[in-house]
Image 1 (spheres, helix red, strand yellow):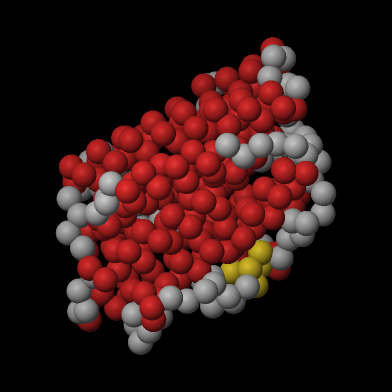
Image 2: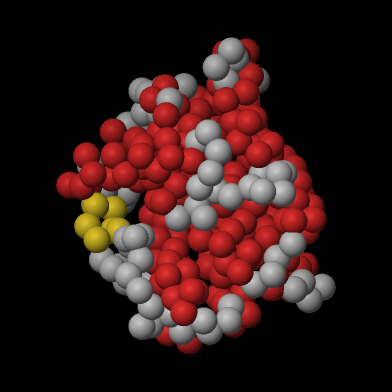
Amino acid sequence: MTPTRSSADSAVDGATTSELTVRRLLVDMRTPLAARWHRNDFLTQYFNALSMSFPVGEQFFIDSMRGALPMLAQQPEHLQLRRDILQFIGQEAAHRQIHALYNAQLETQGLVNKWQHWALRRQARAMRLGMHPKSLLAVTCAYEHLTATLAHQTLQHADALEGAEERMQTMWRWHASEEIEHRSVAFDLYQAVGGNHRKRVQWYLFVLLTMALEATAQTVLNLKHSGKLWRLGTWCDGLAFFLGRQGLVWRSMPALLRYLRRDFHPQQGEHGSDSAEMAQRWLTENASQWRGVR
């Protein structure tokens, strides 16, 4: 799979080599997926809900990067960033393709993807209001930080995917590794085109609330369809995953709050080098599961 190039993409030609690699995941996502592919119903439907948002979300990230790229000055110090942007777009296009296949499996199970429609309506409203490309890029920066934070937890804590089908563990860890690998690209572009701290934080708070509400709503819809919504065990599993002693909320909170700092950068902080090392280790140890295409 080679991502489609645009005129914005061509602007990065001649740049220095990027450390990012566009990969094709060599995992069969067309074979029917078990209705309960994770160890419990809640986690199955929570991860399903996240996947439902990705194809639309990742296309938005690609479009926002392309929309902001013309604002980036044609200077030698930006050559590396331009090449990274092209590779970022390629990686997100690969994620979009895999999750489209995954979501097609969910459709055959009768699950209804409402999240994609909520996102599309929100994007259409932003276009009608004429949101500045910098603001759209700030939204992408916020989502990239949230996905990188989730990715860190996915790789650091094996229990997040323990008991899941092997191919699903591979798919989610591949996605997590690449999210960590390219986590600073949108942020670096935002800084390079003059994005300011106040707007970045304002859009982050909006995105944080929106993602929390919509992820919860889509998970509830999935559980309702599967007939597991009103089972006590379902919510015990959910509460333990999010709010238990080692729950996702407590483990992620320091990283979530760090984004508010004026001196924030995705590569810094307590998860900076650790995340990069974990991502590279997984990609190296599982090189047989993917093929570099660019």
